Image (spheres, rainbow, N blue to C red):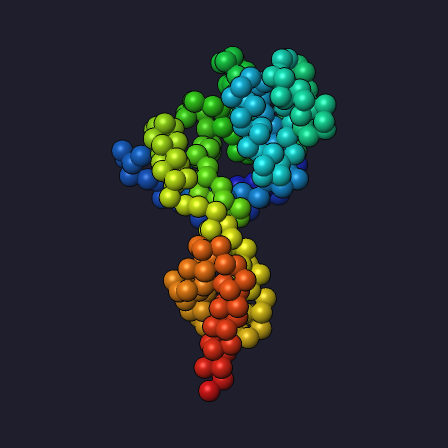
Length: 245
């Protein structure tokens, strides 16, 4: 049995017994489990104040993170963020206590000693860590991101080539337009009424599948959102009536 300890804030508390997992086969490539994390109002630390750190901070802010920047120097934009109260800026070198209460940490410095210290401290306290451009010092890697409203596509090459990931992102940006964001807004607005009229999960799944494949999406593509909604509601009534019969 393997003992693992959970954490509450900074440090660990409690323990739980879990079965020991089987080791991967020798030669197996390191894999990263893809997931989407809710960082809204969660503390994220960015160690470093240069352009790379600025890009990380800007992306984190788009997703609602509460960002603290730790660095003796910072770009003008980062300082502006701090002046506006958008981020917290700590103008000094990294200390282990900076990670207290953090959910995630980036190290984006050209100081190997600092990068190693961030990684060791974060690992000791089970905080997911990314040391930029140093895959061995990463417990997570950041994908190339394309965002259209609530639609987010994340592309990763497992750290092998960020350039390839960025190229793929540009290709997605050319082929996936704003109509997908509009479609998602429509589908999300229909979830409540669909659940009332189609209590069965399988029935709702069939209904939404038909919306995505049928004329509702065609209306959305043409910018006819009113007609799209009317078509979606008409189809819902048809599906509900069929289930009652």
